[in-house]
Image (cartoon, rainbow, N blue to C red; front, side):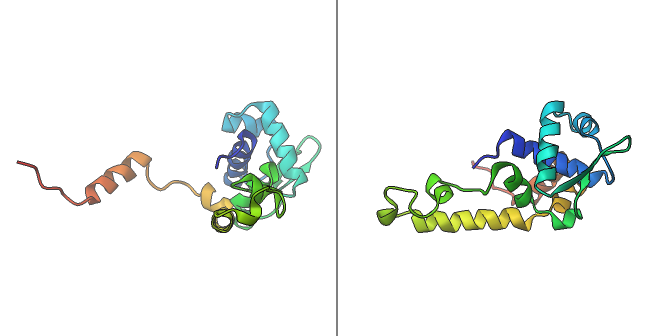
Length: 155
């Protein structure tokens, strides 16, 4: 499974919006996130149409979160750009969308996986991913290595 480029941009932009409360213009968000300005403007407008952002016009206009970051799931952000996540074409098409649906041995298992992926994306809020990182990644890796069990040297 892979997000589209625009869905990836949407997660980045929404994270920026959550970290910097208040109204942000599309150009400010593009510069801050280092995303191409036209793509950022397109994604922000789409997020606004989907009800995740609100927009205001005028000198002090721009975009802001439509509701608290705790109430916006990563799944909702991805769905706004890519539509519902579907691991296979038959899941995306729904019942009757596959020629071998009646005899497919993996249909039920794939459906269970798809449900789990949806749940995982919906269980992570924008606030969760926008939270500041507590320790640099290199430090986290060093601590993880230190916790590994010691191995005996081979003679």
